[in-house]
Image (cartoon, rainbow, N blue to C red; front, side, top):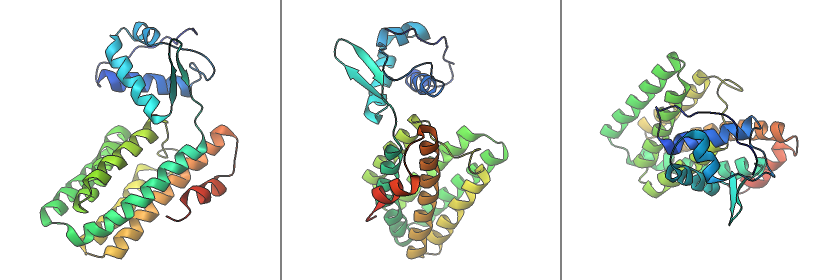
Length: 240
């Protein structure tokens, strides 16, 4: 077994989330690498916590494709491919624009008020430069649109896909665009839903997801040094 990096988790978040962050960050800074074997016991001892939340976190990471378990050996880090990012956003393109279209037709005044509140919270987080709070409200905004579009199963799937993106460590904030830029992409989506302009709601949601997806794919290609971002994007989003 390889030596584990020396790190400690902070007490603020759930232990499972902290373990996931620990492993993800360890892969990003290369203290945990592909080809080496690691164990639940190592992570548990290193972080000074019980094996149960470690096991839960690792199972979620395996589901997301970041690690691979092998019986009686432990787990290994799986190298992330740019195609993983492209596939995630292809799926989102097949779900969220249609939900925004329906939201423009089916939303209630109460739901619009809730969406306005979320936008206000995003704006406050932007002003505070609080990226974690901003993206928490970002996820709430997307779920609210799915709810307005009567797509609960779709909302659950989108949240799972977004969780995969977070686990992979992908973010455009502070790199390709600001929190203000991202907020400005959300506002016309809500405006179209308020005006019951279904086609515009679908188009603005599609544009937002495409912008985000293409930027994250470009980052993944730059990181891996392999492939052509536009060709990968076209391959995985064909037909959606």
